[in-house]
Length: 219
Image (cartoon, rainbow, N blue to C red; front, side, top):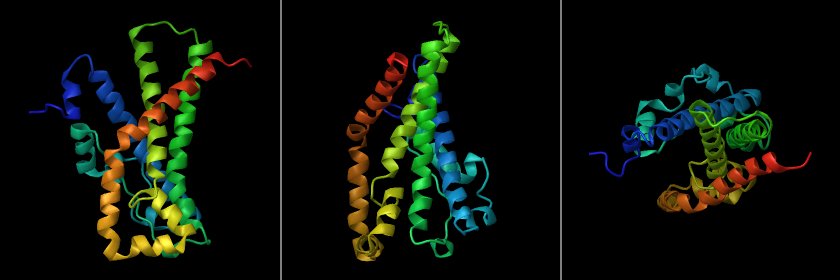
């Protein structure tokens, strides 16, 4: 029944920890990503996130049960933060609000991978099961946040990159806002999503290389 679905990893003892590491990492990362959008919007004059009750750490508010179910079954998830661009103050306020999410993912990735590298270098790591799991989780969390940061910067709706580019380029804003172009945008997103595995491999390798650099660099 679950063949070739992400959830099958939950039933295999060899991949069960991997499954829950991915799920926990994605839920935490998307929640903080959306909260960053909300915090930036509030700072720039739009109180919609707080008025709608979205300034909370509850993942169900940001992702919804369907997104969480899709994550566990198929490994796909999304979140949302209600923003009213007309209430934002500043010429590039919408771009700042959009960028806040990916920036948070990059900071989380940096913190996790740096902490992991320093722990492996100075922490007296012993290959016990608990420490082995902790290392794998930090590596997974750091890699996933790097991927989420890069993925959301692609300038294709509904990703954050499209809002950033649209805020700086009026012609692009008019193009993606034209209902006649919605089909093209959907196809572009599907194509980009299909190519994600190829695009993200270099990101994961870069994250691993950064951790290795922290372990070996001469201070």
